[in-house]
Length: 170
Ligand code: IMP
Image (cartoon, rainbow, N blue to C red; front, side, top):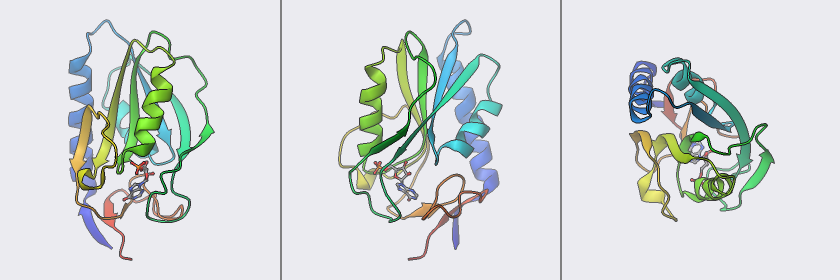
């Protein structure tokens, strides 16, 4: 597989994002990160290690793809949050925004739970594939229309463990 982003490049960009996020919130404010499983887990774990102690976290699981490489547009909700979002500074932490359908759906649901603020951090963005407009406040890397795996991202549940991001040869 061709490596698109090596581990060192990802690590340094995620550190930058962590610092940027911290700078954007007043020091007195707590930040509540909502990791979108499963793809967001590695990004989330590196992101929180780059941040100070004023973070809390929760996890949500949705799936939109089944085992293929093309979005069906169908989003299934598989695990809900454990805690309330009311009056919290929430950041959704997602692996990739592709068509935008998953994120749009998620943002609508989370916004209805009355957070104080709601932002989104995505490690990757494929703007050429967007079907719906969706705001993303923090983007790690903008990439071309390629199916990528590694650093949390899978193909049929494989390759999530890779420390880099590679282009899957179909
Ligand atoms: P969207 O709803 O089309 O934006 O798709 C978002 C979800 O599809 C992501 O959270 C990923 O789980 C998955 N996805 C989209 N593109 C890729 C890719 O290139 N590799 C692996 N998963 C992807």
